[in-house]
Each structure stands twice: as C-alpha cells, then as structure tokens.
Length: 196
Image (cartoon, rainbow, N blue to C red; front, side, top):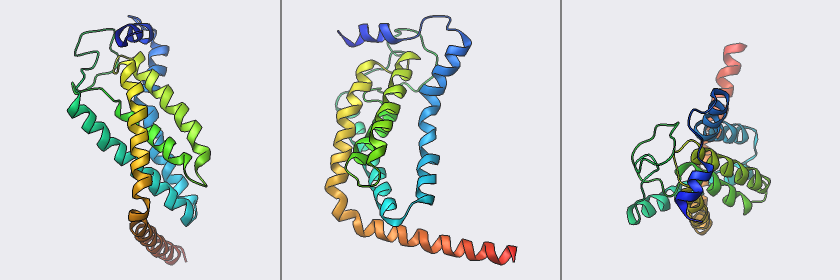
C-alpha cells in the first residue's frame, strides 16, 4: 500500500465534528508539550544517577533531530498540504515532513530509555505516545504515514549516536549535575532565609 493511499485512509473527513477535531488537535499539536514538564518533574525528583540517564535521553533526542535534518536535506518530501491532498485541520510551515520531528523526538527518547537502568520503564509508554502523536498528525493532515514510519529509524540513529557518545559526554553530564546541585542548594538557602 502506498503513502498516498494510506494517507487517504487515515486522514480526517471533511467537516469534522468539533469534539473529534478538538481531540485530534490535542493529540497532534499538544501531546508533545507534555514531555518537557514531565521530564522536568522527573529531574527534580530524581537522584544523580537518574539525572545522568535523563541527560542521555536528551542527547539522543538532539542527535535524532540532527539526523532528521540531514534526511530532509538529502530527500525533501512535501507535506500533504503542499500537494493539496486530503483535509487539513492544522496549519504548518511548508517544509519537508519526512521524517516527523515530533515523533522522531518522542521515539528517540523511548529508544534511548530502553538502554538505561532506571528509565527503561518509559520506553513503551513513549513509543505508544509517539505512535498516537504520529497518527494524530496524519489524521489532521500535517504528515504522511511514511513521515511517521521514517521517524523510527531516525530515532534509532539518534539513540545509537547518544550511546556512542556516552563516555565522551560523561564529564559534561557530571558538570551539569554539579551546577544544578549548587544552584538548588543556593535557592534553598535563600528560600529558608526569606521564610525564617
């Protein structure tokens, strides 16, 4: 089955009911924005070993975004709106949609989590969230299905790159965590001084 036919099967119909449209937009546009606060809360509640693993996940996501940009440069692929295909419920820039950036980031976090000790439990929830996000983006007409499928090998490349860089970046992670600890102690002392 080709990309265009799959898109037609998944893409939302014309005159979508407002409730379904709201749910689709929440998934396609806003689901990704749950990640930064969730990772931030995890960082605040975690010990230093878990923080190191969180930094590893962030490096994997950054590497995956770089790989995604290289794929876009090598093989630009228009979005459905540029080809005037399907129904579009979410405005987007006219850049290449392959691979989907948002899905790439979520899946890179998921695959990098798989290789950690403390955060491996996040792998399958993040893979599921990425799949929902991808289907939502096809449903509202922002991406083709192959844009979503292409995110998986790109995310894997980012996770593998982060794994390869882990020893090189370990001293930097130690410095980041030490700086955070110093700032946190300073802020706690200031807070105690203000409330005393």
